[in-house]
Image (cartoon, rainbow, N blue to C red; front, side, top):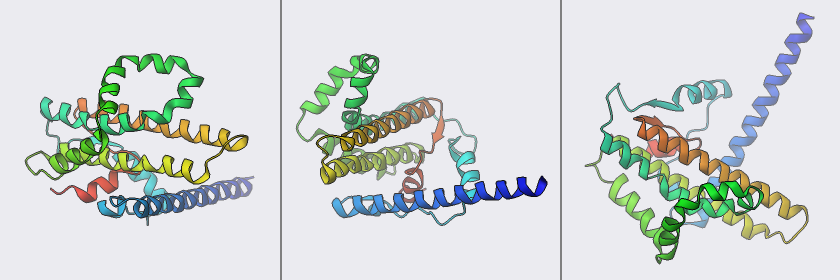
Length: 228
């Protein structure tokens, strides 16, 4: 019995290793597509290290998802608020991917209704997303007068905003008009939207609490670009 249990554990470990490797390959391919399709892709932010074994990656992820702001130092309230505001950019730019989710769950749209005036003003201003994007990157991330805490969170928001190009590329590439293609597109958009909302809430609340959130996929790329 012990030998059978050991073989079962080995089989499960091998299966998760294969899944992990496949996920890394898809992630690298996605970053390459974004880099080739835009002049400001993730390659501009620095490569994200992926050559680590799954067990080590799991330990690092668990220990670094949320860390203290740095060496136990307390983050000033002004910096907490400023760092949290950066996550509004990808949230506003990506809220469009929740259109199917809102049709399925109208209560979610009602919860966001208080933000409609801000969204209308943001979307109604010409080139608002480009202006906000480059202001956040050039005036905050590249501004050494801000603390590393503020610049790191701003950079995470910038990378997350760039990743939002991917759903649009998928829709334009495949362009389903009906059948299972539309169903897959709805699932994909709902997944993107829920991931975006999770990152927004996690990043914002962590900053307000004085913690440093490390978002999946984007944290290492942000680290590579923020000095100090």
